[in-house]
Length: 336
Image: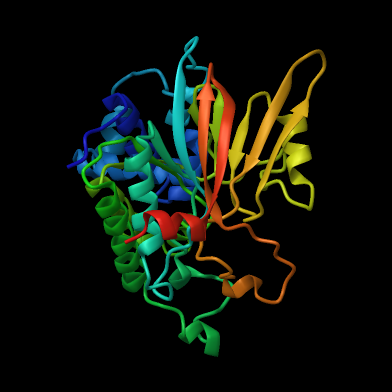
């Protein structure tokens, strides 16, 4: 069983909100003032700890305790930079692994690169798994819908990708983190519409990452290395991902720290000047799909996708040197 990472009181409050709202996860998350994926993750932990029972709501009301505000646990990583500290991060854009992409050599190459270069941390920016089985755009009763893979096939493919990555690592023990993306979030969107399967599909995804030592943070949340914020897609004031041809300009305008993200598959690396002598760096990682591969949903659109990974040095909490490695070069030099 995974060990809890928050005080037990947090998980007890999570269980109480769940029971008081008639086991409606969406309502419970709203009452807890956290997003849906964060709440379901905590609910999963609470179940593993044996806290979620029919007596939970009643027992919680009897004990007169102050309400615990459930804030996203990953925010505590902000502003932890140390003077003169340098970290080397292998930053990997959207992988979109799925059964249709059976060649996992790119994942071996990523792991082998991390081992060879002795990076300090690996961050995959989300959409590691494409989860096409839960694609809501192609309804299940349509011709295209009937051709979707099963969730079991999606997860088996994801497990193969993770295994290939770790084969490439060759035993090199380095912190590994995923900032979950909108494609992994399909799991919670589907679960929300089918509450009877709560805590089932996400457990399969998390078990794979847990087994191989990957940590993860919810979609829309920032994960910080120093003062550099990594997230799948920065979210604007309307609760939506920044979009448009020049969304990086909007992100730089609103952000107070360097930002590394993915989602659009279009690489951009730019320093944005601020008042005085300051500047802010925004990096869009592009994607780490096979060179030239375009996902089905974008095949008839203007893409301009970039294929590769980033090797980023973070010094004094800020982005310093960085190198873009095209995916074909990565596979040729570090693949099997």
